[in-house]
Image (tube, rainbow, N blue to C red; front, side, top):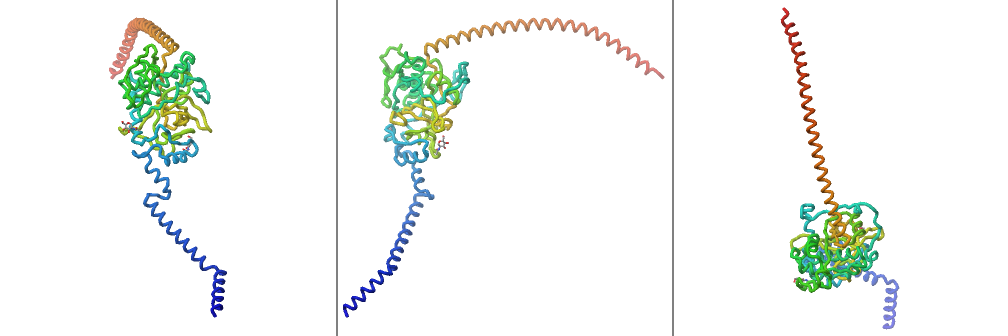
Length: 440
Ligand SMILES: *[C@@H]1O[C@H](CO)[C@@H](O)[C@H](O)[C@H]1NC(C)=O
Ligand SMILES: *[C@@H]1O[C@H](CO)[C@@H](O)[C@H](O)[C@H]1NC(C)=O
């Protein structure tokens, strides 16, 4: 019986296994329960993190640019690369290592185009003149890279400005150095003038707390700049305004002015060398690594202590086109590991690099000084000529007035005669009318 029962049990078990439906059904049921619970938990989680369906992006974005967030945050870096959709790649750089956005507001603050509100007023920032030799005329090449066209004229390695808002000084010194070399690549080979001198000595700038991208040229005009080796860059470490170098080593500036417009900027660079450009600082630019920078849709403008947008100064060293996108080639001052060996390519016309407010500083090269002298003489001559012309014109006017007076006198005497004649006629008519009226 026991065997029979065992056999029956076995048969029953076999038949259950053969059908196999009930245990499978139960298993599926658990999977469905499991998914249900998971979905519920996920929904609660997304709601709690303010997900709006796309939870991941939103939760990462929510701490972007927060004072305590790190510039080099790896989620931010990878998000920027994906948001830029192939235009450029992002990466953490040694320059921003340990920097929070509060450090950005402090360490890059205070740079501006100070004279922008008073362009053209006497003693204020002037617009560059369109000279005959060509801001307006002539073609420029489709691509230009000063490092290639004038080797050795890029004013040395990219600076690391450190925790010192000195881009205004670095960009000006870089542009000026490069312009001297541009004018005579042999005589001025490897010229690298000192931005530290500006940071330490220019009382109208604020040292490591920023300065005027335009105003700084007035200091250079007054004092000239020593080579870098005479006043080496010290960054955040305070450096005294002193040098044991011979002042004869200093290089000067003739003048500076404001230039606007893509074509004019290109012509100016092509004719005389680099210019300085203000850049509106956005968070995604801080982690730019390679490619052509176009601000991503959700890029955040950075603001300084006074609530003004942070402006950063760079030197435009050329331009080009990549896969149809026209760009400026700029030299930055965040070390050579940032961007493309310290340089960046920035899309033209995005409004980030302010093409309408570029600053040109004219290097006081022997040719430029000679030209300036000639221009002065020409102006003097022109003034003399104008004076002579005016005197001649005045004489002509006086002559004509005298003639006119004589003519008027003659005419007056003639009119008197005419009047006499008219009088007679009128008298005639009157007498006629009188005669008619007198008729009965
Ligand atoms: C990529 O760059 C081009 C050219 O500036 C621009 O039109 C486009 O919007 C950019 N794409 C993104 C995702 O930013
Ligand atoms: C820069 O200097 C300021 C003032 O000393 C300091 O508060 C800030 O933490 C510094 N930033 C960095 C990144 O070291």
